[in-house]
Amino acid sequence: MKSYLDLINECDSFPSQVTHPQNYQARLEDCYKLMHVDKPLGYITTPVINSLQHFKEASTDTVGRCFQLDYQSHTVRISGSTIDERSKSVATISEAWRDSGRFKTVSKWRNELYSVYDSDQKILFNVERAASPLFGVVTYGVHMTAFVRTTDGIKIWVPRRAREKHTYGGMLDNTVAGGISVGEGPLETLVREAEEEASFPEDLVREHAKACGTVSYFYVREERAGGEAGYLQPECQYVYDLEVGEEVVPEVNDGEVEEFRLWDIGMIKEALAKGEFKPNCALVMLDFFIRHGILTPENEADYIEVVARLHRRFEFPTA
Image 1 (tube, rainbow, N blue to C red):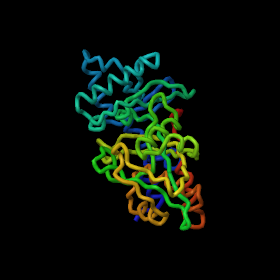
Image 2: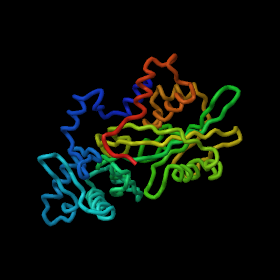
Image 3: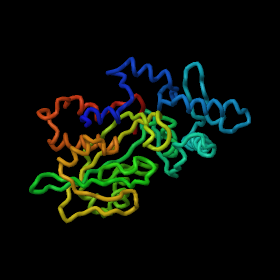
Image 4: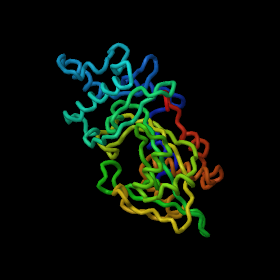
């Protein structure tokens, strides 16, 4: 059975520069830094660097002109002086990976763009969602927990992901969750995802969803994330609560979810201990437990560590 700290270690799995500096430095030795001016935007792993090197060595390959690879400083820079030019360079590289079949991670092309930011919170370029782990950049999403207050205590609407999904098929999820695409903010993303995944009407979400902060972590991808293991994925999730009455029942809509079940806290704790939740959804559930007084210093020996680890500070610029 997994402890709460086990669940956090599983998701926030890249070593911390603060608490594990030697392990952190050892991992960096296997990476190149994706740079803009003097700021790192992400860490790129060796298999991806080998692919970029191949593009460079093919002197007639237009892909090789989309980036600069510095073997001395172990850095990568995207070509282009504007958002559009850099985005085009990133798209050219990403499409070359997809078309070559080199990486399984991009085989499930999303046609969905994520934005990458500089230290002034301005967009530097946009990247296809499926390719973002190969660049190692920070990505963003929204996660909402819909819950009901009953005479038996709080109960939470828990969906099970469709078993045929490319990523984490059949695992438990938060009530509503999704990535933030170009041109959308957190609330707009939440409204759209809530309707698509749970058939929640727009006015319900806009009027009653409560922003409750963020959860952040630095994930080292596993195969169940879709594709190869080992790519680096720092993520920040905007967290929302939605308290509803017993008459409000989420309904499967877009096929992303197999079913919804209204579970009490004991059932959720058991599922967490068995590792049945998607890794980042487990962290969002722990955050809910903390905010609602379910997880306390009195019942959790690692309380301070759990609370701190739900809010990883990145060495990269964020939105």
